[in-house]
Length: 346
Image (cartoon, rainbow, N blue to C red; front, side, top):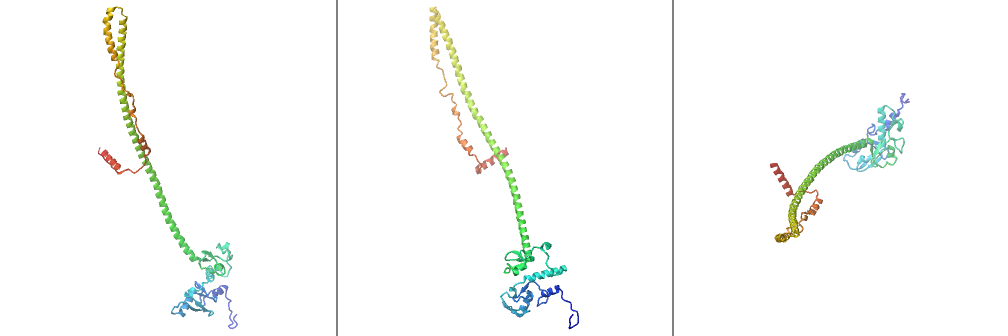
């Protein structure tokens, strides 16, 4: 009860007391982020501090003096003005928690839930503090206590939401890049599969052409072989015929000589002198003529040789051994095209 008025005065609730502590001394409303802290440890909305500074500095000089509206402490500003003042991330996080509790209808002063209940990541250094800010310098999430008192107190920090949106956008761009890269890879894979198929088809076609070329060579060789064998056989028949003819002549001469010998032997055995003399002179003449004609025509030395039909293939063998794939000359290509045109005309 108020003694002066006699009215019952209701004690402020913890929520009201907290809201009063989170009120800006300039706009008298709850702090609007970003919140700056002065060396005298008083907090202000940066927008309110900027308006107050601009009203005292109409010409917008760089730097100057800023007076705390609560304790009148003078702060020397650098060329950035009030934007050079340090942000109070702790107060900003408290404001966020307070607003979340108001939206849920709970008590902002209730102790935070355990990490197992909230399933939110907690700071490893400050076990009861949630990870609620992001250290831009160290590129890692952390808590407000680490920023105020811990290893990140000299680092530049940002809210999780800002970094989340930035990294989410960056990750989305990375996913788009990966998608484009995957599409390119898929196109390359498809092209390479088509290349493999084309290589197989072209190889099969070239194998067929190669087989046809060798078949043609085999046919030419077989045809030429037949021609050369025919030449050998023809000369063989001619020489054998000549020798057979000589053999027949020699046989006839031999038979005639044998008959003359028999006749001469019978004449010698004849005891009748007159008959002997009559027949002997004729036999002597025939014997002399027969002996003179015994040297008949005979084959010349080397007549039986067939060495002149020897085929020298060393050059051809060397050429075939070096037979390889190569670029066809223009002359060969023109000749082949002319032959194809002649075949079509025929």
